[in-house]
Length: 415
Image 1 (cartoon, rainbow, N blue to C red):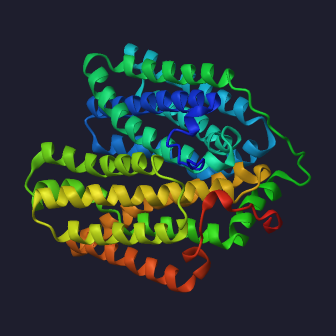
Image 2: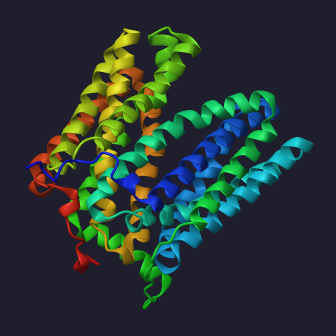
Image 3: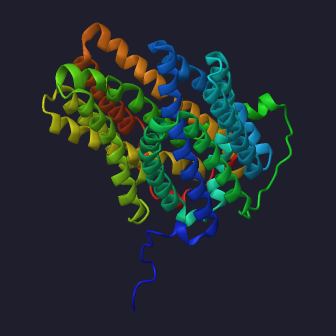
């Protein structure tokens, strides 16, 4: 008799709500990527100052640092679908404002203000978007849904900037309009979803409610360790920030080679995400995460000492492939180990962990490279990642032995 437990790699796509959600999410991400390229190009073109690019990043990073935790509270206290739709509407309106200002040659300062407003609107909806996914697909196929979301996200992450460059070459304002249009398309798709949302009345002050999310992560040690492992791996293994130096002064491949080097981690992540989507759910998620971060660290070390363009390219591909395993495990654990009433706030805590580590990792890599050279910076970061993995593997048997994620139950008493 044939087995009835055969793995279905497209299980998540059997659900109409997931198909609508993922299609809208990919469209919006492509539009956002196109706008990101356009705004950087326009700001540098109009000012001629490299600091203009730094300010562009700063105004988009500030809302993430200061509003992510309050946004998580909102995601747990209001209708998540409606909150995400309002967020998308806000980003669409500000993108239209950027298009009008760009077309008319308006003030750069006003463009920065609109970009800040765009980032605020996006940040307020981000935890709701993350917390919504477990309500869209059953627990048994959630890991498959995460794998497909990361793979389609990688495709959008590559396609968005590429499309933005093409559009900006013809019309920069049109790139902003494209971002607004994709956001509105996502709103239309969300309007077609039928999701039952259970609301819990707030019984404490907003500040105490926000702190509950932090307390939950702190007391759910296996989740805390998974987030910390991802944080330190990204913080220490920031080779990607030094790629211009490697392309120009070490590998001697110029701007063209730099483009390939930058694309390699995303290509590796995409391949891994597609592979995981076609495989059954992990039976040893904790062990796989530790091994993946170890591979990430080892590949970073080899990249750091390599003088071969092709070997360097292969190692960057491997870092992206390994990192994606860690991303799938972390995102799945964050949602499935958290009660629905806390998912928005815990998603916000996770976003702070990972978002801050990206920025701080770039700063750490640049600082070490400034005083000790880029090779020492990259190799020491890879060694640091390996040391963190060893410490976690030895010091946390619970993380090392963590098994199938879809079988894990939320720790309701941890909050």
